[in-house]
Each structure stands twice: as structure tokens, then as C-alpha cells.
Length: 289
Image (cartoon, rainbow, N blue to C red):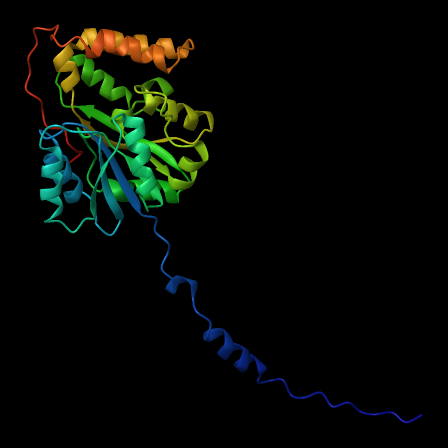
């Protein structure tokens, strides 16, 4: 039987070829990491007194590279709110958009969300001032896997009760939450929930927050957002706090949107007389130093 000798080629140089091929592959470190962008959404109604200060604060304390757009949704202002927004937008690197919507904060915020192009939606009241570099802080939390949350808060008041209330906003307890602390949420999660419930003319922030807490998807960023205590100064601290608690308890006991609105209109909206003798000048707590 004839046998053949099979010659095995010399592969000693293959490792050099392999090294060459590997060295030509792109390194993952050379790829830019995807950074989500924010859409800031602010519902406004007759905010001429505050809106320029808020816009200056936002554009000073964030990077335009992180902000897809800053959307203000007007619910029918009769003052100079729209004029001031348009004037400010002419001289900034930020993409500022002014929309019109039917009045109602839930409807206004949903309208802003529909126009937003950012990966993260950031809902903010027109009298609230986020901390420095708030955009980076929010993006960092989302990249850690936290799709929704808020900042702790400081009222612009030296009254002991409001300072105590501000202190407790650093904790994750559900009872310490409110729309004044602002709300960031990924577009994906916002759409999954269905946005703000427009049947609630008041308490709409808390309805969304309840959904997030049920899903265990909420984080409190430990930097302070400054918020105006103007309604407390207008109505009286103890009077307003009592009725806020009453609304909270009513909802907890099952009150619907119409019941909450009727109570709010009767006891808060229609009562314009301050019920406190304490008159204080607002203190500046716009952001952590």
C-alpha cells in the first residue's frame, strides 16, 4: 500500500499576520459614547415677571450641546410672556421654541413633549431654578440606569417650616415629592406611561410621580433646585399647607380629578387674601454653589 507524506506548511509567521490583522481593527475606546440629549419643557401662563430670569438661569447653567431644545408652552398669556420669550430667543445659542396650547399644565406639558426631540424630557415650573450643570447631572443619572427623577429643593424663604419642608425633599419618600422639584424622564418611559393625565387640572405632577414610584423608577439627585414660595406668601403658609395636605389625603382616599379641582378652586384659587402677617423678601436660592 502506497502512502503519501503530507507536508504541513510552516505557520511560524502566522502570528505576525494575526497581529497585523488585529492591529487594524478599530478600538472601542476610539468610538464616541452616545450621550442622550435633553428637551426642557416649561408650561407658562402670565409669567412675564419671572420668565426672563428663568431663561437666563437655564442657558447659563447648562451646555447647549446637551439641550435639544427649550420648549415653552403658553396656555394663553395676557401679559408680555410671549414677547419676552421671543426677545430672549434672538440672542442665545440655545434652540428656544414657543408653542401655544389649551390652558392646563398637563395639556401644556404633553403638547411640549409631542414636539420634543430629546431622549430625555425635563419638565420644569416657570418659577423653579435647577442647580448648576443640571443637564450633566440628569444625563449622568440616566446613563446609570435611572430613567426618571428630580432634584431636592430649597424654597426662597427663611420661614422655619418651609426650610424644614425643603430639607425633607432630599429623601426618597413618596410624600416628599411634588412638581416644584422638576421632573426628568426618558422619552421611552414617558410614552410607555402615556404622558400626563389630562383629566387632572391640578395634581397632574403627582399622578405621574405615583406611576413612577409604582414602577420603582425614581431617583432624587442630591443637588438643590431653587423654587419660589410665592404662593405661600400670597395665601399664608399654614393656610396653604393645610389645604395642600387635604388635597393629598383626598386623593389618597380615592377622590377623582373633578373633586380635587373643586376643592382647589374653593379653598385656594378663589381665596386671594394673604392670611399671615409675615411679609418677607424672597431669598436667592437658585442653585447650589
